[in-house]
Image (cartoon, rainbow, N blue to C red; front, side, top):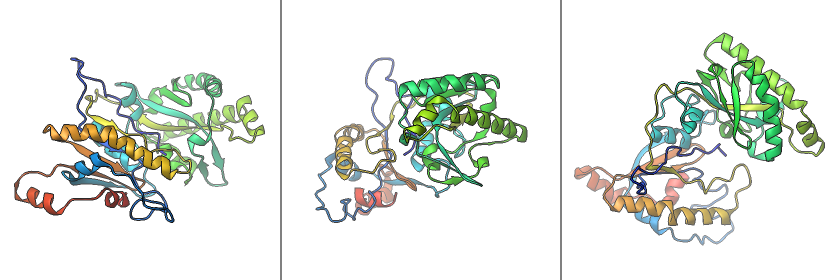
Length: 337
């Protein structure tokens, strides 16, 4: 799954009152593979529990926007919807997520993730990052091996979380970097791992990446993992690169509900049902409260190919007609994703 988008600037107002939820984004909202039109797996009884808060929201909200992506998109539909909701400038593959998530202005940043690439004659294939299951100690040792090498090219590196490293340096400006959740499993050329606008910058990045791969592939951690029949770490995945020229205003009313995302692990239908119930009782209830208080709200459902955003219809005759005849069901929306 995607390296999940987060609503980073979700701090409460200075007066301490909780911020009303205005836009809820739900990644992983598509019907499960093999599910029927009710959302239940084939062969199972369609005993889907009621979701009263979603039902109340859908009674008043209508589709207002949609984002569609093909299988070669560098970012998922929900990530693009979140970038739009957060006011993050840039095009797909060029959103400066690392700078946004860390509040860095002016200095180019990127996320670096320890990775395993299956090397072919003419292409490489990224193994889903969550399959590595790096321990904290393994991640610390690998970072310690990579940091001095990157510093020679003006890039600083420190851990934000195990297996999630923040890199800063001028070499990370103006890069096109696909998100790991979109790239995993696809066959890519070496040039597609990351692309720079300038040929000299591209050559330098290729050299740095090659040196990192040599360090990682021969590291004792990788050798021990390979001996234990676990994926060795033989590369890093760069994504969310770029710089912010000015601060992006905070959007505390934007929230992402992560409960439906389970990485690349097989989806458990029971866990998926429980996740929908948790969202209904939590975030969906908060969004409904905002709607009932008269605030404009949006609900975005994201899947592998599309993200659909719903909002209250505008006033006037067309809005009244839409409210009468355009009521969507949750299952119909999920089938579109």
